[in-house]
Amino acid sequence: MEYKNITVTEKEEIVTLTINREKALNALNALTFTELNHFFSTEGPSRKGLRGVIVTGAGDRAFVAGADIKEFLDFGADGAAKVAKRGQDVFFLIERFHVPVIAAVNGFALGGGCELAMACHMRIAGEKAKFGQPEVNLGIIPGYGGTQRLIQLIGKGKAIELLTTGDMIKADEAYRLGLANHVVPAGEEVAKAMEIFDKIKQKAPIAVANVISCVNKYFEPGNDGFDYEVTYFGKTSNSADFVEGATAFIEKRKAEFKGE
Image 1 (cartoon, one colour):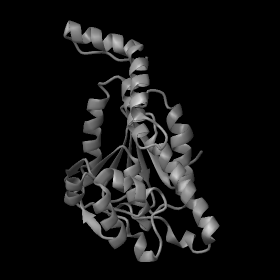
Image 2 (image 1 turned 135 degrees about the vertical axis):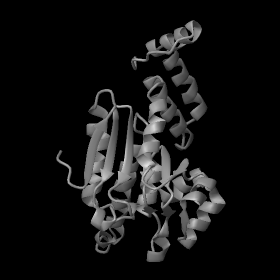
Image 3 (image 1 turned 90 degrees about the vertical axis):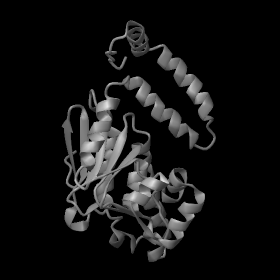
Image 4 (image 1 turned 180 degrees about the horizontal axis):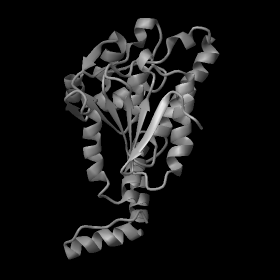
């Protein structure tokens, strides 16, 4: 698929996926969701040796400043519900992706943009980043998982406050609340993400993928994350990477993992 609204580059086993609608502050529209869906469902999983994905926005003003509200006006209740479901499905693909996904938040992350950042496994905020779910200002509510993931990350009370006031918070408060993993100088968001990936790339790929799976199970209704942990512990213990890791530990050398 030829992408028009996102750009995809790869360096040292890490893909940088940029939402490339700078004039629209990288707002999410239908085509952008289609392209995100294709990458995380088809292209990304087919890339051999992929160890991580960085999601960011073009320019220095916005990560993603929200959804393209003009598209919502003529949907009606059923149409809007279908759009929300499609958005949630795409963000679940990101949340359940087999390698870590880090949001490099380089500006406004509002509405759908905040929801996109929260669907990623980690968030690096530049000093100028601002987060918020301002949907109540428009008479609607978040539709791409914002009411659920914000609670998971910062707790019920503060989440309800932000969701009902529509307030924006700066990077330092996002960090204090647990919404951002790190705050860095503006322009260094991707570099910090790469620094984290430099550490992750030294670990066993199968173990990293299974950590993501087990953590996600904690939040999935009807699943017992502890049971999944037992199952995946057994699977990783039966891998060649575990034999290599344990042997390297005993021999006091650096492990050479192969993802097997």
